Length: 217
Ligand SMILES: Nc1nc2c(c(=O)[nH]1)N[C@H]1C(S)=C(S)[C@@H](COP(=O)(O)O)O[C@H]1N2
Ligand SMILES: [Mo]
Image 1 (spheres, rainbow, N blue to C red):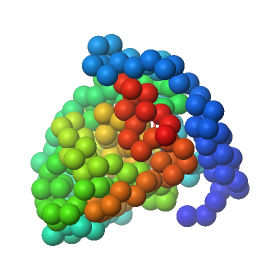
Image 2: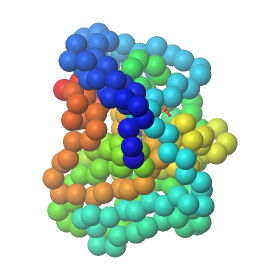
Image 3: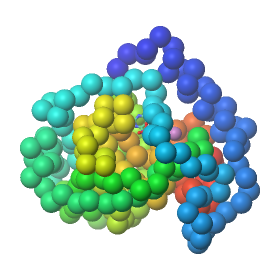
Image 4: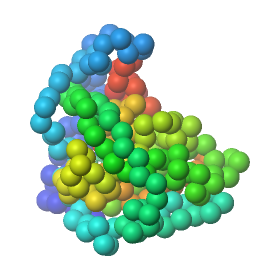
């Protein structure tokens, strides 16, 4: 996708500088999740939009997701195929590294565990890269990817996910900071060796646990 007049480059430079400066780090941790709000976060009731300044416009009928790489049975899903899979509902909190948290988000979609069951990762598979249609990528271990609570989602609070929040389909990985939840999900790549994603290559942590402030690294 083409650059939108340099806005993207400016956004990227700002967030890269935050990582270098260690912005928002409190030095506190809550590894046992005793509070509900992770260290350094503040609660919002709106839902901010964060991306690279590009918002792909994809209809449900043209949306496709390919799941490939180190898998026995690669799969391409379109909207009807996605809807034919078992639908799961979850409720989770979201924590964005730029400081906001939003509670009690109700999601509808398909579990990442079910998707991996369908494609059957090969014995050496250990990592996953999620790709968005805007060129964004983010990485996660296969073990974390299939944890309970992780979905690819199409509805938020019983309303179709809007374009600005990654509709028609995005990932939702509530355990990690929100940059791990790729919007406009187009590809799930299963691989043997880890491959840092967009922000992970630009000063953000390879994992991203909000409870231990894995903001940068
Ligand atoms: N495809 C894509 N997914 C993305 C991003 C992006 O730029 N492109 N930004 C990430 C970041 S940094 C955040 S904080 C969340 C923001 O999601 P929201 O806009 O729905 O709040 O999306 C994540 N997923
Ligand atoms: Mo972010």
